[in-house]
Image 1 (tube, rainbow, N blue to C red):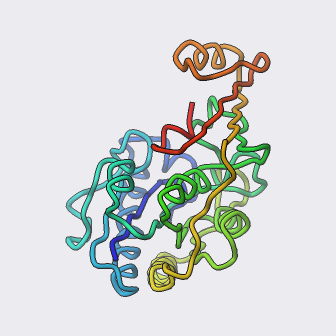
Image 2: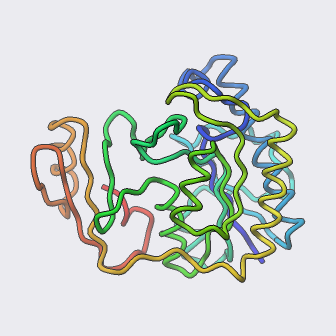
Length: 261
């Protein structure tokens, strides 16, 4: 079995303030990136213990410059594009490490979807979703289940609510307010991630892929009207519903971009 680990930075162990995520070039941000590698390596180790033969990993935060490649477990294979790995039929299970909750989640640490500055609310078929659901829905379109999520407590609760109670989760902190969190001790957090990855991968064949009825009606409310202007200008498929809201219809999911604007 081959598996793929998608990563983000907000839900990583040891990251308890917004500055550690946002202030690139600081000691705090470097620490966050080091913790990212520790969490990824714990997931790699757990996935292999659960039966994975090849573990692909993706630097999924921002501009994909958060990995410290020298610290990555040598058994992992870094791949730059989610679309390529999934569409090529290379993987049979999907894991998310460092996840965060959807926007509007109380006590969700750094809750947002895609852009906290621009995107206010994102819905599919009338239901609110975030990046956890997006990744699971994309891989689910190819028959690949999302088997594990790590992140803050709110992100793990969201994963269970949307993807089902059978998904393995590892909570590494609890949001106190949006920009602050209370941390699980680092060694304990790594152990939780390792065990969740092992558990999820070992049960991958028993977990259904996440799917929603097609066609999808995807709606995005922006923070400002000019952000909505920009979406309309560059996305010919987008329909404007009001000053800050756009909508699109997706008949078939072929790439992750099909879920975005």
